[in-house]
Image (cartoon, rainbow, N blue to C red; front, top):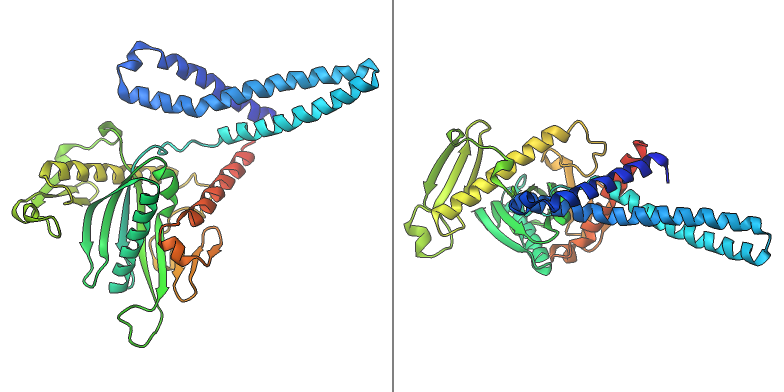
Length: 362
């Protein structure tokens, strides 16, 4: 393993020991946010520490076997050679683990997320496609025992949604769905098309990590305008009789968020504030990382149909992810929630990009 990489792994091990000390401090036990953050960091670093210890121990054993070559006993030389092969194979496996540990940690890995789907080019057909996408994600979430809750929705005139926002909570939700942001294009014959012509429509999707604590994004009350109104849609008499829906406008940026799914105005306001914080956090991170990004293939485009990240072609039963050149003739399975067919190659491509960037830094 290259000396520079090995030194960086040793720094991770030093940090793991430092975090372990911090976890044992009384003040950490009294601060739940700090305890959670440090525990997650330690759980991420500790395997690398153990791998490093074994890697260096095996290095010392390898050096000892080399000394046996000077003994002159053919049987000892043979045994030493076999032992070095075993040690080399194990050290190579450990080296792969250590390099993996050097890849940048995803600070949002454990967060819940907001999934925003908006109908774009295509009118009614785009709204219907937005409904198809929501069902796809809902089925995927159900299969993984995640919780998917609608935050707000604006229904299309013939079905589907002009816009729908859902919250997804569950172990691994962010890690799996973070690559879904971008423009999704559909090619099919709309139900309203009498001539049988194929139309192209599009929806844009944004995946935003949910802010876990209020102090992650500072929002001044004076910067907010809060409006309440009577919710529409399903929900029974309560929805129709009370002004429980909440709309919050962030005046400095013009961002507007709404929530009408919860039964009380208080709950809707809390959920709307969480969504607003997530949008502000995402905007700030985008600003900070735009110039540093070395790979563009997994990043979100402008939302224009021509900058699609994925195409769903119904006549051919085909799904194509344009960022990684993936083509699958399993459209029905994907739309039925078998999203790992697409998501796993995307995760593998992201890892390759991260490894290439790491190699370029050495």
